[in-house]
Image (tube, rainbow, N blue to C red; front, side, top):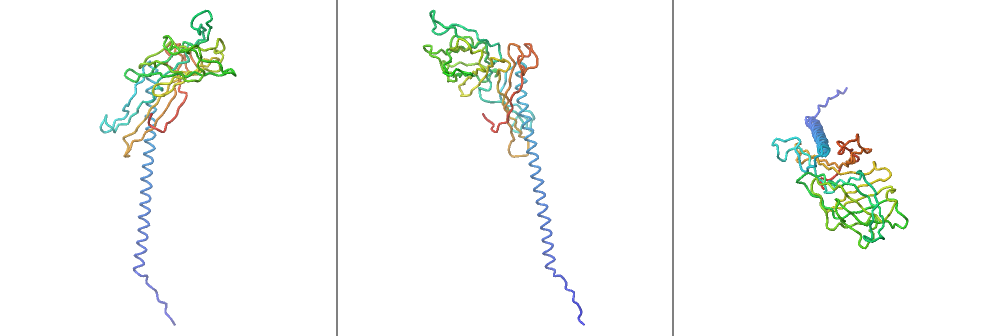
Length: 318
């Protein structure tokens, strides 16, 4: 009769199994640690991105606050949360900036009129009673010490236009002065063409032009257009367009643009986190009449209005 023999496991195999088990535990711990670290970094990044958008919004609200109080808008960086060394590069800030055209307010919500007046030829009984759009305002909303805004050219467009497209522009007067541009020989500029303003005209910070007018070839009918667009082209090639809607003046544009960058620099990252906003703000008529975006009438409400467009930008400048 045979007797079964029990084999003892080799000590070498036990060591191998132990090493495998320990390695698996270490790998699991490393994986968990890596996951937790990345999760914390991602959470921190998202928190900083949220802070950055709040900072950008604070910059926009500061611009609106200044404007609505009747003050002008100041550019530059402002500290919101100071870092360990206040006033240095480790502060959380918002920064207000933008192209010059952003700060040009072309207010087509003013008491616009289409009063006719004789023009072209400039002398003699053969002069024709031309229509003109007048009494709209232009304003540099920047504060003293900021940039002047220089107008190089203008472009005027409208709709509808006759099949022959023979309606044109004869003259442009800005700031209640004599002609800044007049069609040579009464040969009108075509609608939507670029009209050079020579010499260029400049609005200093806070300056307002109250009496502006554009003369047309038409003797009637311009006050029945669906819309008339007036575009200012500035020396930095920026443009600002405003629209007058003759059938419903409350739908006319009186806009300017607000831009603000919020930047978080106090995080654990070796880089700052920023987000940038662009906001279009539409104001009431300076005459005190309310529009569709305004809450109440009266001169005290002339700087009131509403945000009509909101966009996040993917670049810090311009």
